Image 1 (tube, one colour):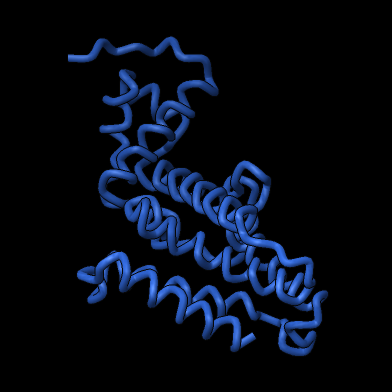
Image 2 (tube, helix red, strand yellow; image 1 turned 60 degrees about the horizontal axis):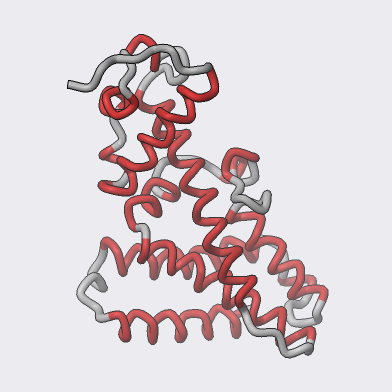
Length: 208
C-alpha cells in the first residue's frame, strides 16, 4: 500500500488532489471522481484532504472548472491555427468555425473531461469565473463571446442579433458533441463526424 504522507505544502496538496480528480474524470467522466480515491492517489489521509475539499461535490466542482479551462485551451489552440486571409469578415468567420471545431475536438479527444466540464450543474453566472479559464486567461464562454463580438465588429453579425447569440451557437455545437460521445452518433467513423462537424459549422455561420 502507498505510504500515507500529510507533509504537503498547503497549495501543493490541493493541487495534487485536484490533479488526481482530473485524471479520474479523464478516465471515467464526472461519476468517476471520488474524494477517497483522490486521497489514495495522492498518498494522503482523508482527514488531510478535507482541509481542502469538504466533500466529493467540492472536488467535482473544482475538477469541472479545471476541465473547462482545458477545453478553453483546446479552443484557443484551434483559433490560433485558423488560416488568415487578411479579409476582416472572412477571418472573423474562420475564427468562429475554429472555436466551434476546437470545442468539438475536445469532446472527441477527451470525452471524460468534456462530460466533467459541461454536465456538472452550473449556470451562466459562473461561466466567466477565473477558475474556469485556460492558460490564456479566458473561459470557453468568454472565448465564444469575444468571437461573436468580433463578428459584429467585422460587419458579419448585425448588432441587433448579437444579444444571447452565444446560447444559440453553443447549443448547436454542444448538441453535436454529446450525440457523438454519448448518443446515437457514437458509431460514426471519423470521416462521418468530420463531415457532420463541417455541415454544422456551416449552419451556425449562416445562422449568424
